[in-house]
Amino acid sequence: MTSLDDLPLRDDLRGLTPYGAPQAPLPVALNVNENTHPVPDAVASDILDDIAVALRDVNRYPDREFTTLREGFAEYLGHGLSADRIWAGNGSNEVLQHIAQAFGGPGRTAFGFAPTYSMYPLITQGTGSTWVAGTRQPDYTLSAEEAAEQVAAADPDIVLLCSPNNPTGTPLGLDVVEAVYEASRGVVVVDEAYQEFAPRDAPSALTLLDGRPRLAVSRTMSKAFAFAGARVGYLAADPAFIDALRLVRLPYHLSALTQAAAVAALRNAETMLAMVDEIVEQRDRITATLEALGYAPHESWSNFVLFGGVSDPKATWQSLYDKGILVRDVGIAGHLRVTAGTEAETTAFLDALASIESAS
Ligand code: PMP
Image (cartoon, rainbow, N blue to C red):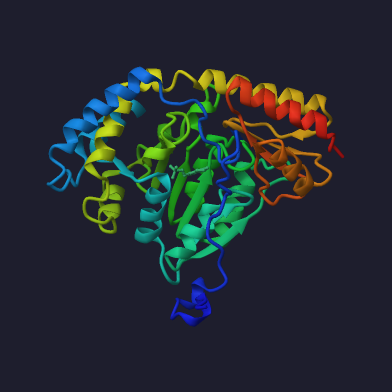
């Protein structure tokens, strides 16, 4: 049988492992931070109407500039943004890949504070750039001073700041973003994939965009918008930054059907986002119950909770799996990560965990 070793693969890709969160068909799937609430019926039929219209023109290539969608994102984000400061892709992963293609590459580096989103190293390496991991405090927080020091020492071409951070849920102060920007010569990306789950009064890094042409803020419709299957992510930055991304995107990268679905979903933003408060409530219930069970949950501003105090994460993961519940072993010793589900899913997880008694 042919193996990768038999193929003329790029040397720098040898030995890498692809992204591979299990996609097991279990009744309670709380492992990839999706929104487990389905799109409401009324919104689904509105989206379908728009897709039906787009389908009639599907013999033609779509609007390469996805103008209507960019206008929709500008309006949704507010902060005085206009469409010329917006970019989008098939998931924020693709948006991040565009950044890596435009600003990274062989001989260049991307930097992030570990542990952080597992795709950052993979997207970096996929473009021939080198991943450099910085460090956090034991509770995963970062001060502006230490962050700036590490970035200045590493001198990367790209800095990826995940806010709130995945897989830890940790909030990131805007003072850290400002300090890192000052300390770097490269582009600074604040990945706000989970921003909608943060406290309402927590300011977004969008407030820092003016006057900072190397700064970009990325978002996704996969989490709060319950749109993970549609694959839509986006970004706000200076118009020149957007021009850089145009150089590397494939022509017509956002299909007409994707654009139609996303525009219709954005038109229904209020209904699409109605579940955010309920999810935050379930997240806080998870935190409180985990504490009561003797685990050590970390503060989370996202739709998931990382918790320590698990004596044998692999065994606990398997026991939960056997009870029909999928959580994530993110490879941090003594820890597991769980996504906040519906009330019923969350109850199923908490009851199952209570019956296992694996707190150390
Ligand atoms: N950023 C972070 C921090 C994430 O956790 C994820 C998904 N898990 C993404 C980006 C990518 O999401 P998507 O490609 O679905 O927009």
